[in-house]
Image (cartoon, rainbow, N blue to C red; front, top):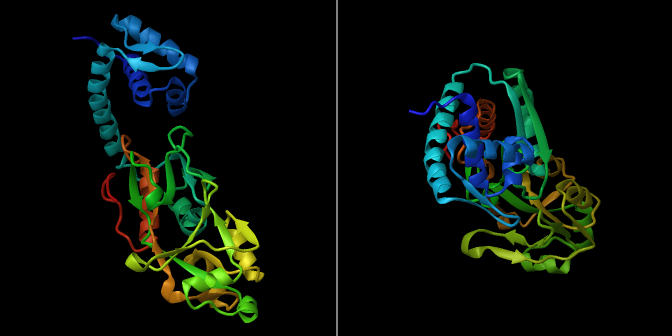
Length: 310
């Protein structure tokens, strides 16, 4: 039986990561090392095993027949080790370490900011590194542990966990604007009044979705101002520049104080929940598990029981 020391296991993990990512550069980013270091480790592993594992050209990287067989068998074994260590880590009373998250701006404001004080009070040895970005990013390639997007935007190869219930989208307007141009009563009325256009993460203009199910209507509104940031959209609505479309939870205070009014509330649209996602091959880190539980409890959802709960 071949001895499997710590170095050999590390080199085997490097090999499996390269095969899975099909890119030396992306594997290096995931593992936090340089591509030259990966190449050195791979050559060392092939020398030690006496078998060529990868065929590399300037354009492609493919495992040899022997490499493909080895990678397939190693994936199972390394996942078993990773799951075992992850299960053990759940017994820690106080998670420690750094957690890198990438979240939408609205998610950072609505669901992360409210739980941060309690999270750091309960887990003072945790450090959260938050990247706020409305563009969809490759969290593995960029080195994030998890991302937060709307449920319908979670990549297919990721595990997704709903953090909230469905999100309500509404049309709002300032009292001054309504007095000036009138209050829209039907979706088509929005085509006759100034509206604040929306631009989403892929830089495309987003039509407003009104109503639900079979009655859902998409309205391609027009107006003097377009923004990809909720803060600027709400500010423009407060200034009476146009009617706006946003999450109801983002303007709850403004509506309660009368600075903004809900328009056509019967045409509010139910959208997907905020969802946290992470690579399916990884056990949920204890610090991430604890954060998910806090957010879900805040929104009346059950605690996360297993890593594959949604």
